[in-house]
Image 1: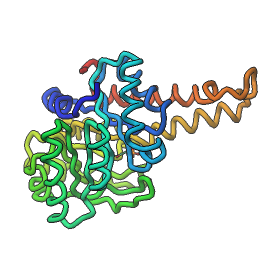
Image 2: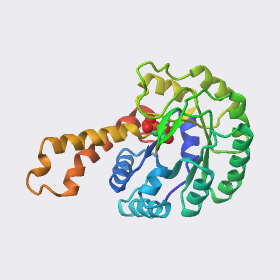
Image 3: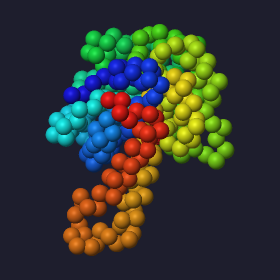
Image 4: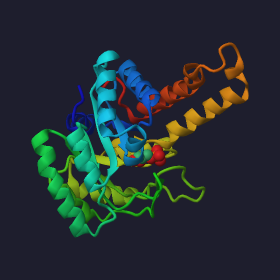
Length: 287
Ligand code: 13P
């Protein structure tokens, strides 16, 4: 059964570790992440961008697929199905479709509008037992064709949004989606500490988990980050192994047209990436 992310994140704050959000793109991706989480006894959050939602035939299809897998694979660890960077309309659609967790990203609106729209979702999510992530200070880089300019959140604005009663808060601290450029300045721990100071025990979310050095991840967790999003790193690992398999002509050996065999090395690469992240985040054995 899908669960809200609230309890797993409260435990993560207490235990000083972080739960990984791994974005899904298809059945293979979803199965690989769920099996790894179960094997390692780690709670897990499956992230779905609106673009991935369309690709996978809509939110209802995804809810059906994930619920079916949880049952058929005998998954016992807590699993949250979470909308990633949702619009207001997307958030409502996912709530109706049966998602157990929602991100409403109002960071590109003026703060008053972000507050108004986030407020409208707080009550609905509360009544339905769905966790809600809000964002202040846009995360840079490109995701699903949306390009953000990467900024550091204003700690007072973070407090204003946190006080609305959201479950978790994504605050921009110089992090960006995708690969980090050579001249990246690193995470702003001053901003993170100032935000933490204002919002207390509210779980903080670190987007752009791909390519952040391990010491920065650990420091971020020590300063209140309880959820870390990873997408590009799984994609890079999947693409590299699939390309290698085809370039080496292995797909032409034997039954060379079997899609299950062609995708298998990429799937193993996703599992290895998820395992590595769960080790770094400290969530293994915490389910
Ligand atoms: P990366 O693609 O950089 O790992 O970021 C993922 C993310 O933050 C999804 O919201």
